[in-house]
Amino acid sequence: MNTSTPTQAPQRRLTTSAMIASIAEEGQRTTKAPFGHALARLADERPDVVGLSADLAKYTDMHVFREAHPDRFFQMGMAEQAMLGAAAGLAEVGLTPFASTYSVFATRRAYDFLCLDIAEPGLNVNVVGALPGLTTGYGPSHQATEDLAILRAMPGLTIVDPADSVDIEQAVPALAAHPGPTYLRLLRGAVPTVLDEYDYRFELGKAAELRGGRDVLFVSTGLMTVRALTAARELEADHVDVAVLHVPTIKPFDRETVLRETAKGRLVVTLENHSVVGGLAESVASCLAFARQTAHLVPIGLPDEFLAAGALPTLHDRYGLSVEAIKRRVKREL
Image (cartoon, rainbow, N blue to C red; front, side, top):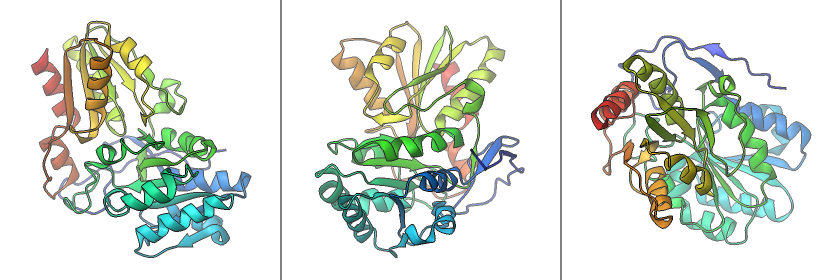
């Protein structure tokens, strides 16, 4: 049973540039540390589940697991390569590790260890990356705007970009049950709770239509699905009917569903908290190209550049990820 209770998010100040900032909109329901609580619950049922952290347990919500199962938690220090190597060793002897750090460190710094220690032998190691995309205001050293592009080409790696607390809570046991390596883009802290209103169930490798619409199709992933749902609802006032297709699994990609939904003659807008290079937009575009199918495709994502530091709400509007920016782009394209 989920013991974490959704609460009302407090009003945000737009002037903060904190390392960890909530992505919740004002008044939005949130759940605290959904990943940590989901992993602790899973470990109650499965003695093989262990957790590792590269000195970032508090900032990846792994501290919840640490407090619930201290004998199964390993603090590896600021040594991401060593952490992934140790996780591989734990998986070799039959344990199911979840190794958490910031996305930039898991992908840029420890890529070779993830590739050769974990992915090449096909081990069940679950890498959990916090601060994906533009979820921190601390600039390029911590903004993992290209992690999907880095990892999509790694053979055998499953990649999940959850939208909210519901997605995270359901993804954790699914990833543990998956026999090979996985990478989870983590939303931590006070995470929006939205998908419970849409009769949604996370299914690894499958996209889910959350709402229908005649004029526009939003194909979204990660936190941008929550923005897509809000923008779709508000665009109704302008008589624009928008469907939302949530793609929580970037790899393997649900080509069948994407091809079916993009074939209906609507404006297709991809939305991702990632560079427009190498992520969801290019996954959809290549899917269409290889199937010899056409669509009016508009990518909404982060630009191909190193981003500025600053307050998240300001940066999200500047780089086109805010609800208002999404609505402006849709109206312009229509």
